[in-house]
Amino acid sequence: MVVIGVKIIQSVVDLSHWFLSRAVQEGSMVIDATAGNGHDTLFLANLVGPSGKVYAFDIQEKALETTKALLAAHGLEERVQLIHNGHEKMDKYVPQKVHAVLFNLGYLPGGDRNIITYPDTTVQALNKSIHLLVPGGVLAIVVYWGHPGGGEEKEAVEEWMGQLSPAEYDLMKITFPNKNKAPYLIGVQKKSGRLKNEICPPKKNSRDNREL
Ligand SMILES: C[S@@+](CC[C@H](N)C(=O)[O-])C[C@H]1O[C@@H](n2cnc3c(N)ncnc32)[C@H](O)[C@@H]1O
Image (tube, rainbow, N blue to C red; front, side, top):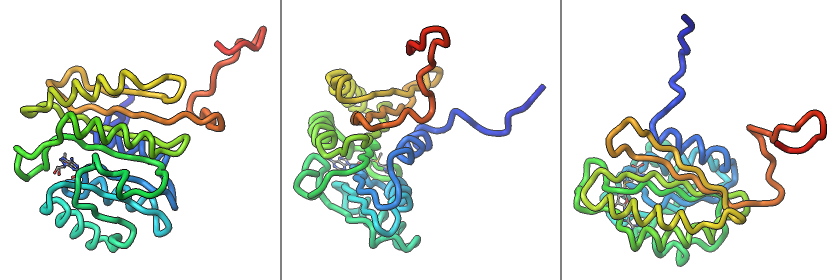
């Protein structure tokens, strides 16, 4: 028996990082819409490098303090703007187009579980996010929905996702169907005519060269 030594189906957070890393590179401008304890902000700060920038939002002072300390411990505070305000106001703070936006919905791990992301502000922020994306830019949404209020937010996000035009956006959803109320990943990419299909090029029918 051959044992594969790599865990291929990773955690939802790791999958979101993999997805973001396809679109974010040195010099990119990105938004962490839910800074929380700063783990995602740190990941993005590493990706954008010294010439890039991360805008990181949270409504909780405590979350931004933790994020600031984490960034300082890694010497990366300079490339991150911490914003103590709701992500639904992102258009007031972000003056340029961005390559990626990340949402990690729900409550602050280790914090007050009553302070959660809410359907109306999340949907407002999602709408603003897709308008801020450059062509080819991506939006990653990690949907936690096991907590009180999470189900309503999940429904709102699903409804929002359902109205994205396939002519303008590519969309994916990665779920973990054998786990109860497991968080899942929604990935959106704004289409651009110049994008290359790098992983699975369309197969050609060898006889008449039609795309299958
Ligand atoms: C699941 S946590 C984020 C985890 C984080 N990404 C990390 O790496 O630790 C969700 C965060 O969203 C924040 N939040 C809730 N409503 C918000 C809003 N309207 N705008 C920005 N952040 C919000 C909460 O305060 C909480 O810290």
